[in-house]
Image (cartoon, rainbow, N blue to C red):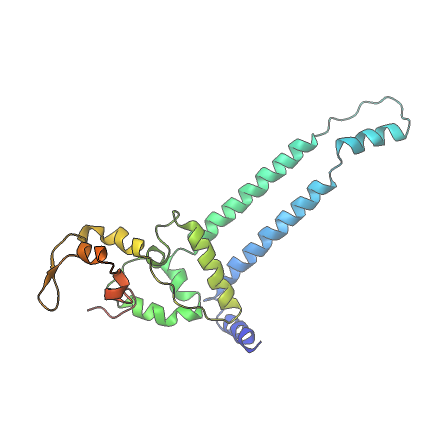
Length: 214
C-alpha cells in the first residue's frame, strides 16, 4: 500500500514528466470502454426471428416500411470500425512510446539507467533497439514489456533489469565476427571463435550501454 501511495505522489508531483504514462493508461481504458459499448449495441440489435415474431403478433395493415440495414451488415460495420480504432490507437501508442525521450523521462525508475546510457559508448543507439529489437518487427515483445513496465511504475513496484538478447547484439555487430582483434593480453582472436566456444556477448562485455564510455 505504501508503495502505491508513493507512486501516486510521484505522478502528481511531476505531471508533465508522467503525462505520457498516464495518457497511455487512459487510452487503454478508453479503448476497452468503446469495445464494451459497441458489444452492447450489437447485442441490442433485433434479430431476424424477433422481427418476424413482432410482425406476426399484431395484425397490421399493409404499409410501406423503410428498408432496414441487415443485422450482419451492422455487425460487420461496427466490427470494422472498432478494429480500425484499436489498430490506429495501438500504432499511435507504440510509436509514441518508442522514442528515447519517452524511455528516459517517463518512469522514475529510469533515472539511473538514463544517466549511464547518456555517457556510454551506445549513447547514439535507441533504447528499444537493444532491449526489444528492430522497431515494428518486435512489437509483440515491446507490447508485453512496455505494459509490464507501466504497471510496475503505476503500482510503485520495481522490476529487474531487461537483459539484451544475444541475437540483438549480433544483429548490429555481425560484421565484426571474423575480424581479427588484439586482446588486452596481446593475443589475437575473433569474436566468431569465442561464440563457437560457447561464450556470450554479455559474458565479456557486461552491461554494455549502461557503463561509462572508455
